[in-house]
Length: 208
Ligand SMILES: C[S@@+](CC[C@H](N)C(=O)[O-])C[C@H]1O[C@@H](n2cnc3c(N)ncnc32)[C@H](O)[C@@H]1O
Image (cartoon, rainbow, N blue to C red):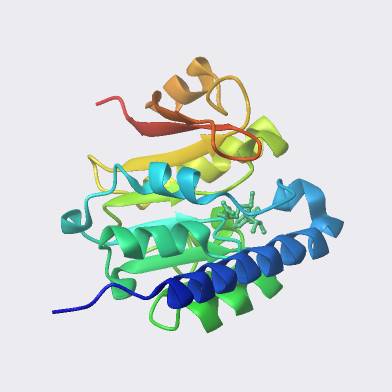
């Protein structure tokens, strides 16, 4: 039987975690040259990560992650029981993509823009995923690009697949009309106050 870690070991672990989180926060700041694309001043916190993956059922099959950054949601998906081999993480920033490869050697890391790699002719064009999780800063993108990204993601999702997306805004990152034009609907899936800034999660799915 496993014994409980000692107090000293627990302090060591929490120091390692704090150190790793601080290093990731610095990495984010280092990438802010491209602030519109990174879309946040720090990685998402653990409460948001747990919430955004809470609707994922590992038994449903392969999972797509877009805008993986330093891998906060990637780690949460694996902790939820999604096998690393069943995960594809798409990340546009080459520094974050390299970090993800080092951190998650068994996850398929695809460097590039979600709208390109998932779209027709892209390297993931023939894939099928059960569900998807997004860390993309959609509100920073013009509406036409938001629509293109959603189209590309849903083209790869199962008929009953859902996309879990967070936003710092007061409502879903695409209006009801724009979603309806894509045959989609967004349902609130939880508000996370213990995140900086507080965020809301939406479950976006097909209407039919
Ligand atoms: C707000 S950060 C979120 C990172 C991480 N998921 C988290 O929650 O901490 C957004 C990430 O999306 C990436 N990104 C931005 N536009 C992208 C695109 N079109 N395709 C793929 N990744 C993109 C950025 O490089 C950045 O790592």
